[in-house]
Length: 297
Ligand SMILES: Nc1ncnc2c1ncn2[C@@H]1O[C@H](COP(=O)(O)OP(=O)(O)OP(=O)(O)O)[C@@H](O)[C@H]1O
Image (cartoon, rainbow, N blue to C red):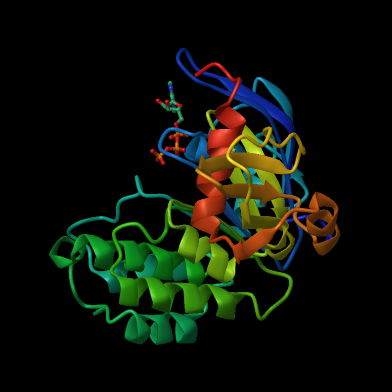
């Protein structure tokens, strides 16, 4: 297996259900990178992940997971991919130790010392039957089982939902540790833009089955600004393509800008009062609202 293959590639992938379609999804993740997949409820995040994992067959397009064509070569690709989604369940009457022994038997890469370390860090007891674990503890147990396999790619569908802030922090720290080995990669979906901002090298915003932003996280955050200006109340509307939204309150105008630079601001030649960076959450909302303008719902 080539170690230089991309972690995954989706090229012009489409999938239609009766009431929803995923259209023309193209995404690439390089080895050693983390991608955060963000979208509102029903946007198509889980569907994209299921296509990537070979659990669904696309109507059109190409998918490669660790260089393997999906879904045709799913068995070969799966050995090196750790996948956790929120519809996975552990065997309720078995202990966590039983699950760890089971994984150790199946996966030659199982790292027992790392599993023991994660048990401590996540505050889990190996001897405890799964049915006695809380929802958050079961989520942590599933993640432990995926992480201790030391897969080349981790695919996690909403890994931090149901976890308290401390557990979320521990988990994200763990993800960053995984990436110290720069051949490993992570794709995770989340509603939590703070998590995504913290650990993602790349981000993908998805809405109503389409990718509405796909970029390097740092460059993306750099492009967006809120700019406040004083203008005569009857000044004409701005027409620059970088202005995604403009709110007027008397003589005060607040612009949401995608494509900000100092040169751009200088060309605007306007009496600027303030320039503010935007959080990923604010950018996410602005991107989704902007992409919905003129698109049928
Ligand atoms: N097997 C299926 N058959 C028919 N429709 C489906 C199927 N799987 C998903 N869908 C539909 O596809 C749409 C997208 O669902 P998906 O689970 O991918 O969204 P999501 O972005 O993960 O949402 P959430 O954040 O709410 O989990 C939904 O409207 C869902 O009803």
